[in-house]
Length: 185
Image (cartoon, rainbow, N blue to C red; front, top):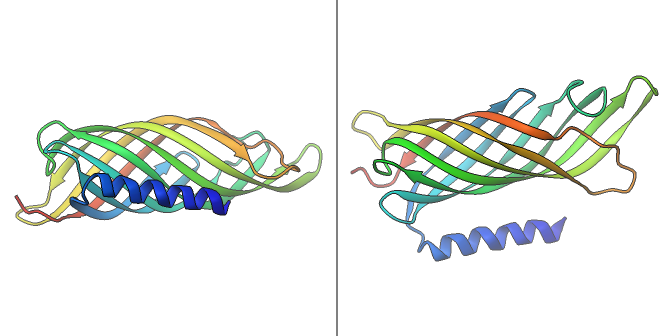
């Protein structure tokens, strides 16, 4: 697991080095999906007048109930994402689309009511998504609000040999990004 964390750190560092650290905004992103929430800190780096790279780090808190492979699944984990956003108008406001890939290191508590068994499973979740949204600049300020909708897949990679399968598959997330923009233009 330490190797994976180091790899994520190297990728994030390299991304911002290549982008010449032209930080355009930073803030807090909150995403909700049918069985959980993802609060995270996020930063955006401009690549051009209409595109950015972004990185986020946060937590994933979930309760799959009986929507997963087991009768009950709940847990949490830490992780983050790297992504690319294209802005149709300009970086400060308007419609946008993008792609991102989240990686979550989750600890799942599960229960099988039929077999009267329970346990835990440690997983790495790979979650590639596509998203769209609209950025609103708040009146004459450097603050912005960006609601988003993302759809994608969740794939579980199991970390221990005594695991039980847990929920994965299609995912839809509603998001809200509250940010402070560096340049006021």
